[in-house]
Image (cartoon, rainbow, N blue to C red; front, side, top):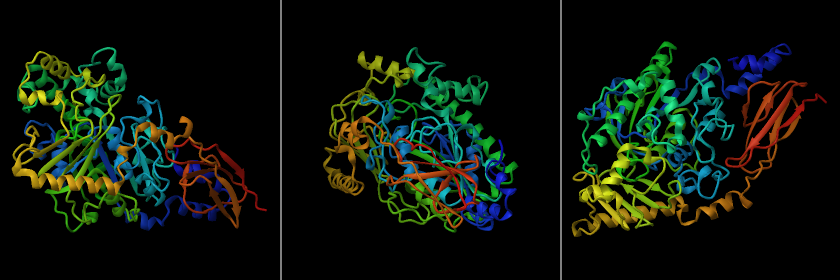
Length: 569
């Protein structure tokens, strides 16, 4: 790939060294010396995986690379996703806001029962990688977006968030001295990877890409089975059968394959001399891709492992190498924490807290809403010891039919055993109405199988959790009370995406000025067919340059392209 200098600066170099210097400052946002003083940040986000890592105490897991990373960093043991399923969780992570606060809670917006639409966040809300890009970072991700104001695949979301998306993204594409932020999605642990190859036709065609990615990323992955069904531990909410054991073992073997990918990435950082300047965060998007875990608000669905490796130069004084930190963390806390580490002031709308220097959390919250075509609404709060879940559809069982999940061999067996009355009381719970409220003591009941709502000994704790949830819903303005149809009509009047206004181009006193009349629009530009850049302030440009600009408000249609040749007069 041609470098940014080749694509952007080269036509101007022949005109003026002065122009080169000015444009270099534009791209970086700060002087090179300042850039080099800021850390690189690399987030490695595995899919559909709870804390099944040996460094987190799981003796079955085969995770030597993650274990090594943990010895070099910090293991955070009380980290929670805001949802037990990917799109709402990823929408919350990328914005630093609970998905229920801006209408991103339903799974997924672009293929639900109302048809395809995109969530429209408030106009001031930006994905935190865009804020990093505005501050001079090179930002990139791979081939999964899934933010609810995008689809899954690259190119489907706001073009202003990333410098590069898809296979083009890599830290090696940044400018010399430019810090980077990268988000790598490790998809081998996805629920679809637990399907036997190709699953059950025709449902498996829905996510055939999951299997293709497995074979492409790691040839021979199906042949590597370091964990056998006999080794796994079966939680009490599953029957102990050969099918259940086989699927859990397959999940562990996918984790072992993902661990090798982590090792490859970390070695590449070392080889490029970047290990001492890069903060590495390994985390997962939500809990296990197994029945009664994914999509649910039990810890099996929302509790995630997180490792942070700090280079000595950037390690906070409060942090010790090879340590365990049990503070409560939500995935929405990554946004303010990473922004502060990069020297960017976190915007006031963020609902996360800096988990390094911010005030400690007392509670963490999560939510479940529509799952594909199944309407549900649940909210959960935990303080690390107790979990409270409130259901607005108290008769809606978690083990309902779901075309994609039903590809799992163990799911088919569980449903069959339930229909035959062959599950015990604990194993039947997930297939039966959950009721209005649930309260669990995670110390004595880590699998959340004993509901304490009616136990008089826990009434004071129940009231504490109820009040915490009510306060949180009010504070973040939980939109769960609004129907999805009403939200859609507010996001897209007439069920049509509004069109972002194209930027106006103005050139005065050697500076290019761009403005879109759409409130909250992000604006990008390119000069002389160079790379697209994020516009945040007037740009010094030489007369005669050809400028193209476009704009997008998150969730709206991208604007038409505006272009002009800058006239010295």
